Image 1 (tube, helix red, strand yellow):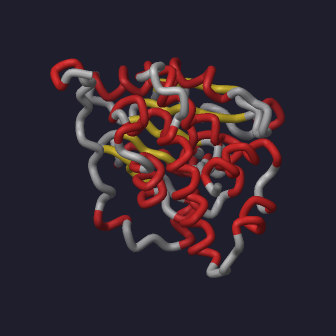
Image 2: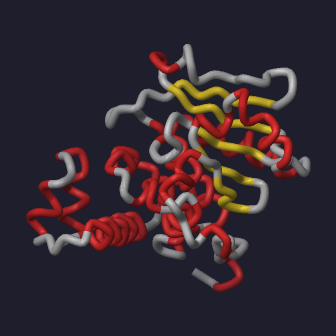
Length: 232
């Protein structure tokens, strides 16, 4: 492909330095992933947190929940903030990608208007994190930057995500890189590299020397094919 025809993307910014010293209690708080884009748990969007939301100048919220959570995970300030409510089942067969276009449109609209958006689920480490990673991939062309999106979200929302096995149930997010930007490549190598990179981070954090077969056994058959490709 000619240089002038290559897709151009903005640079993915680093995580704020004051978030690099992450502490476990921070999992109950929201963190700013990009200027104006926050990720966190439902506890960050509860009625008792209105003053914090206002202090951070939040104007929009993406509320991710499943049906059985609707009674307690819900918009608490519908007359004060704009909400996008997504009913996404927290299970490995849910096709989370179908919710991405509306999520990206909502986030883009918020940021373009000068607003700030909080994306939250229940814990803020699985479905909502997957949507934020997908947003970063599309916006910053992460397929050319390996695991940058995962690394940024992992640094800002930190170990709460990279320690979460639920994130791998959302591994289909990384498949967005190919159909969205480049259908010519047969093998989504950024997907495989990204998966392998994050798996190694988890192993490192757990402090256990694991063989390749032990790594594979920790994850379900849903991603076994990807694991075999990532760990040949």
